[in-house]
Length: 201
Image (spheres, rainbow, N blue to C red):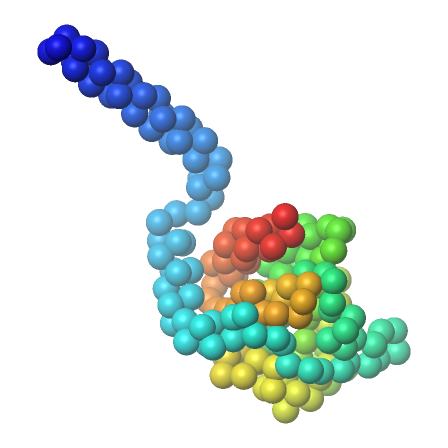
């Protein structure tokens, strides 16, 4: 009986060793670019905006309408697609820090089926064009009045980021951000990217 128990114990130990080695190996590529401090910083930011997320998650996005020379965007044009929306303004340091990360995020996802990317600001069209040129931005940016922006983002601070599901419900919300472009890149292109991937499955 002792020998049987010993063999069983040895077998369990070997299985645990194998699984540990497998998970560590598999995790190298997944987490090699994201440190413990990155994770702590991101989830700290999520915690700070936690009340906003709890208030908005699962609720439909506020009704709005954007019209310009090329497009008309309303709540109905968002339906049946997963939509990423980012709100910003020119003198917001964390907003500016996100620009290159947003450009990278946009180019990585723009051809994905059932996905659309929208950037919204209350800045004038001339300021939008100036910002796009200065930062080599190719993603679509639209103007809404300050009151309309505030109506949509509620108590969120800037930048404000949302992922909207196919039924126009908010499935992800984040308020604020880092003034460090490298941190902004990891927040967007690792953590938020993971949330988008989940929604597009």
